[in-house]
Image 1 (cartoon, rainbow, N blue to C red):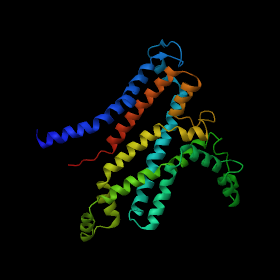
Image 2: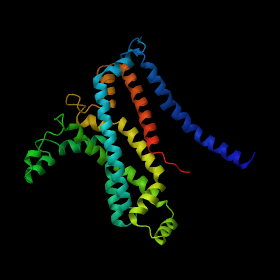
Image 3: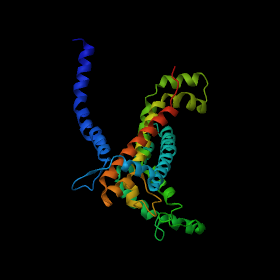
Image 4: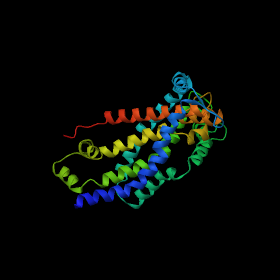
Length: 291
């Protein structure tokens, strides 16, 4: 057996346990959920085959599409909020001084906290009577800006974007710093010798060299945003009047509050399909000609 064959065999043996676990805990449940989407089932008792009725109801339900629209707002806020902010911070905090390490830890800290804790903290910040946000507006002469941030359907969705962006900047910051530190110092020296300015160096050298990392960050943003649930559930529960309903909370409410497990399975299958379509579309848009 050649060295290359032995190496491939070792890799296969090493990956096999993970692949088996992934198959049983991710792949099979996805198809199992899609299968249950063809049944009317309340979680207990006999299930009734209804064909495509659940899937048709998903497509025709306006609340589902409102949830999808809200999810798209969260996706946009994540992709155009978390990624650019993390990228800028990574460029500023790339060196390993004590001050920069403290700032990195501070930015990453929200990720360490439980989403329930983050939701409670921001619920108090947005509180209409005792919240610090309205208190600040009141004391700087902007009382007209005071709002019931989480109770007003016109602003509640936008108010939720802030804690979502704040909570998940940290992981992308670490990813981008690692990618930037892997760029060879010789490239930086060559650009200085050639007289390349900092702006041109950023857009023509630095960003192209970490483009694959940016693409991974965008994929993680989209997939994470489409399964957002805990923070929204703690802060608003999807209300008021479904103004902050997301696909995950819509699925949860129909599955565990109304006990429509078959319909909830159909919704979860729709979420998976939409996630795949958005990820494929984002990768196509971000595709670069590397020839």
